[in-house]
Every structure is written in structure tokens, then in C-alpha cells.
Length: 396
Image 1: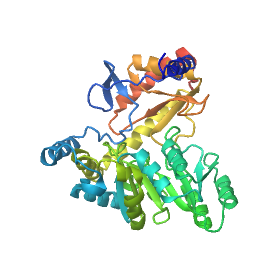
Image 2: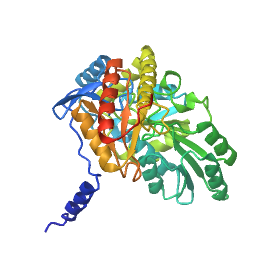
Image 3: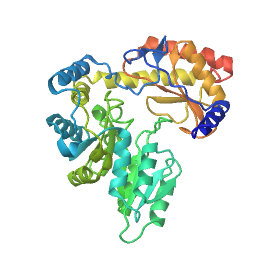
């Protein structure tokens, strides 16, 4: 018997509980319509909000950078892996976020985890929303700081925790997602900023699903609420609305300099290759040059949400292009996703541990590149599958 054979039993249990994941394989370029596992489907599973992941300008920029500068950099940033284009991208990201400075990380996950772990110690405290992303949770654990979790979007509870955990000389970090990735709702950032300032706490927002989506030109939740200069740390990804790969931190210059010296993912991972950086730079230019993409994203979102509500689906508290269809039971959720895929719509099942037990859902994300025809066809499929499974109650 092998030392890892116990995992076979664990996998069998996941299968019985309807929790075993079977990732589908993309067989071409991503887009509003794409090919997965040999089937052409309407793709409602992607974070490609603005449709930039296969944009011709990004593709050409990536190819040109690879031809000129090579496939990789050959080193971490602090040794020999910082290129001129890395600095250029960071300058652009700082301007995009209306911040003093910015630093690129290898992913949004490492941006969160590496920053939280770098700025706090075991003597400090983190006050965190219950539904914050796993990367925030991991960073909090790595920091060894005390962790206090407040109920989702409960500002009064967060205020109380900041009061209860205050100590002379102790640093406090109040942290929240800007847009919550499984529910699509927006953080009550103005109220959180108020209490952070009252307590002298560091305010940090993870804008992974808000960058490129909310605010003027997609600048994020800080811009959306007019809070420039009042949020200490902004986190963003380059793999969602930007359409490429990586993450970044935006904030004051001394924060960025500290992360260059103590941010472990930055220090110990090879820097992003030229093709990735060039494509990210071009994505920011496209966002500026083609504002109609953001407008289409939101008009598509409004149309699709209205259709789901008409069909009687439970979409929770969604306020953004992330719109869950909350079903609850894990096995029925997996079946809804499977039948929808067979009918030509890809919307993956989201089950425990990504969401709580009994809160299973399929998560849909519309993009700027979906057409009204795409979304109408998807709604028709959901209507049929929902009726077959007894999910949703059409409203007359």
C-alpha cells in the first residue's frame, strides 16, 4: 500500500458528497464562445470581463515582446530580472489606481498573501470580512498576527473588533474584498474606511474583481466610491479584466519599497516574462482607448440579471457581472452545471470548500464580448434545465 493511498478514500468521499471537481479543458482561445472538452459552448465561466484575453492588440504586443526580449527573464526581480517594461507597467498601474506607486507580483494570490504577511507580525491584528478571498486568509495566517473575522459586510461588528483588539503599539489591519468573487456584491467601503481612520487602522482592499470593472475607466472600488487617498493598500490582478496574468499592489512609495525588500513572493519568484508584461501594458491602453467595452459589460450585465430574475432564479446579493444562481444542494448544482454544458452553456458548479456547505451555486460571469443572442440563448438553456430540475420559479 502506497503512502498516499489514503487520498483515494478522501476522493471517493468527495465524489459521494457531490464535491469532487473535474476541471474542463479549453481547446482554443478563450472568449464569449469557446470550445471545452470537444464542445462549442457559450462561456459564462471566465473572468475575462472586458474580452481582452484574445484581443488582437494584446496578442501582437505579446508576440513582439517575445521576439525582441525572449521567452523569460532568467531571474527574480531583485537580482537580474527587473526589465524596463516592468517599471513601465508599474508606473501605469499606479496611475490607473491613482496611487503613488505600484509593484507587480506573479499573481493576485501572491499579491494578497505576500503583502499581508510582510507588513504585520505576531503582535498585530487583522480584522477580516468572513467572505474574503482565500489569499487574504493565507496571508493572514502567514503573518502570525491575531485574526478576527466579522460577519459579511457587518460594519458595526468590524468596528467592535477594532475596539476590542486595540493595544498600545499594536498595528491593526482592516481588510475586505472590493467585489466578492462568489456572490458578486460590493463591499461597504465608505463605512469601512471611516472606522479604519477612526481607529488608526491600515485599510486594505482586494480589488481583483473590481479592477477594470468598477469606477471611472475601471479604476476599481476606491474610485467607484470616491475614496482616493483614504485606502492605504489596493490589490489588483492582471488575469481578470486585464486579461493576462499576474497581480499588483498599489499604495504609498514606502509600502512598495518595503515589499521589494520583504515581500517573499516578489523576492523568491522569477519575474513575469516579457510577453506577459507587454500584453498587460497594452491592455491598459485598450481600456483607455475603447471605453465602450466597459459600457457593454454593464449593459450585458443588466440584461442578463433581468432575465435570471424573470426566470425566478436566486441570484443572492449580486451587484456586478458576477451573478450566481444559488441552488444549495451540491449534487443538484453539479447536475445543473452538467446539463447546461451539454445544452451548450458553460457555467461551473461552485461547491464546498469554495463556498459554505449548503450554499452551492453555479457562477455566471458575463463579459463585454457576449452578444444579446449569446445571453438570450443561455437564458433559454437555464430555463429548460431549471424546469427539469425544479430550480427557479418563472415570474409572470
